[in-house]
Length: 283
Image (cartoon, rainbow, N blue to C red; front, side, top):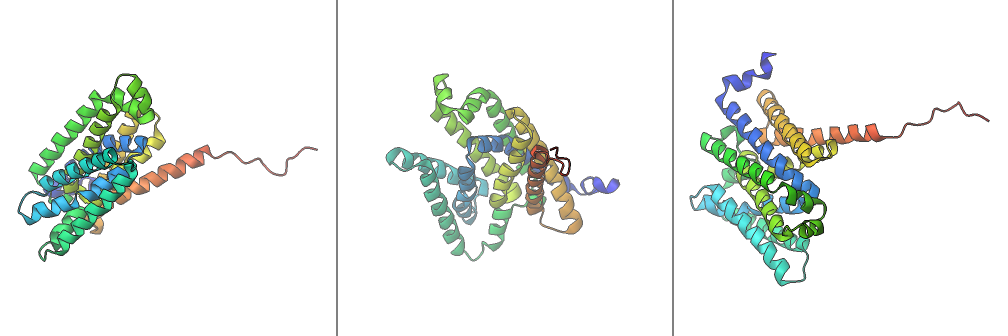
């Protein structure tokens, strides 16, 4: 049974990747639950891809990519608010416009650079096996901030997920707490892209939380399941990567997605009505 733990006890890079991945799983489990319950998958996807131009510009100018990701996320959220407030367009339309615009801008910036090939792969798919102690510490701080925000805003968030009107009647500003929720999503995306990349962070936000929503009815239980499934996916994905020499970040997200479909299949099997036994009819 030593093969189950040996990679992490003998390899510092893998152990650091496991710690960072578990922290990503906790933050994405919390935020992903709100994304699933509120139907914010589109904006989660838009943020995960819309930060690309900010990251590209930051790296080309010699700044940390996380600074560019933060600026890109602020531009995305600010742009969505501006379009919806100054026009009759729906939020989905505003998100879609900025999503394709920011993604296209990112591709244009990357295409103009001849030295960006390695960096773009790292941005899109992460470098979990090359993460350093500073990045792990930053992920820990972000995870604690997300957990604290979810705890403090638990009641208004719960009301907002199921009835924004009820949240307003209860004395909570729907717009304020919606923006706080968006800020949490942005923070999870900004920090987690270093670990699993901008393309794969969306999978970590949705797959474990989706499975959690199938397994539990209460919000805290959903978050717990999402964090546990995400953490197991990190462990299993790193093991697969280590023994089969596959991409670590992609392996993690693939495991999480497979677990979601296993849970979905099991739940449907459990809820399927029993068929009547043939050949025993009574006249």
